[in-house]
Length: 231
Image (tube, rainbow, N blue to C red; front, side):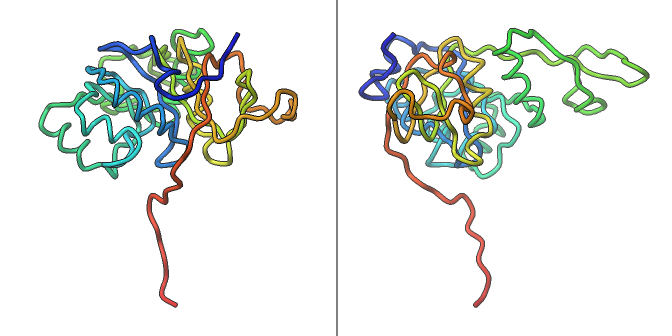
């Protein structure tokens, strides 16, 4: 199966449609599939539901899809650093489903593993638990969370071979693996595509079986918050 495509637009061809659900990797500005996000923006699809740890910043990451009003709903655990997100949410233009961070990661992983739901204590007694099934185990109350299965996953890795076996660099190995797992189709962008067999099998973070299409892209290295001290 040919998995390597020449551009983000080519890799997404035939996969996008209005109203779809997209799982996106990344954390803050780290491990962001920026080329694929730009191609989704250019494609003009709308009414998207996006599951991602956060919504990027105003002019980078998923923030560019908020600027073009292509996102209808965010499923996220952290939504700071994005003034446009705040404006749309407070004005009622954007739906938001808050998730504790670990719960969101596990919902993605569960969806990819074929697990429809799981019980967790996280969120019990808070607004997170409203409307969810409660069940007691060994004297403790848990709530039922559903696994996420997305129409499309978009993720970003450091290196991969042409079959999609991938390595994520340092903290970019955050939401990318579970996001990749939970999509019916996964498209991955990488900094470098290497020769098959050159990656140590024991170092693979994401097996290529989860990856359907991939591209090699160029990526911007941003610092989300620069903290300095006086000399």
